[in-house]
Image (cartoon, rainbow, N blue to C red):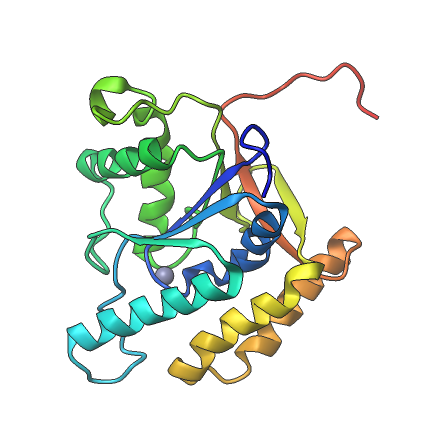
Length: 231
Ligand SMILES: [Zn+2]
């Protein structure tokens, strides 16, 4: 475990369990380094048809089981919020709800979806977190929790339409955990070839960045730091 001063906190926040697959390697890297990772699902993904025609309670409990399995594989913390699946809307109220979670966790970085994905919950979550970060800085909004005024960068899943700088994360050491998490969902949902596809995508990003396997994120920074030299 790292000393308190160095220990970073990552808040990975998504609408649905299985959305986190694209950042499992990054989360695992941070946990291995001794950082705290809180993986948050805003809904219980209760509208899915992947499990067939089963009662909502059964889906909710299956989603919670999956989340616990992921937590065990990479050793992260798990939390669920009470948003409704397919109803994650960009409202001031929802942004304030997330601001409350941010001020409770006090993360150094957020990982989430981008604003281009076809699922409206994914796009809404990207925007809600953009809105929540400045709200978490306002004491009156997040009272009695203390405001979170530290520099907080949002890392969105990379999309080629994003006009933002991006980074590659070397996840070569975490590839087995990525496979294990993907397989956990693939077995339940009957995803054919999911593990191979996930590995192939990491390999492709690894080839772009000169490592074996990589994950890629767009970066939304509040502040930019000037440097004196460029090389
Ligand atoms: Zn999703």
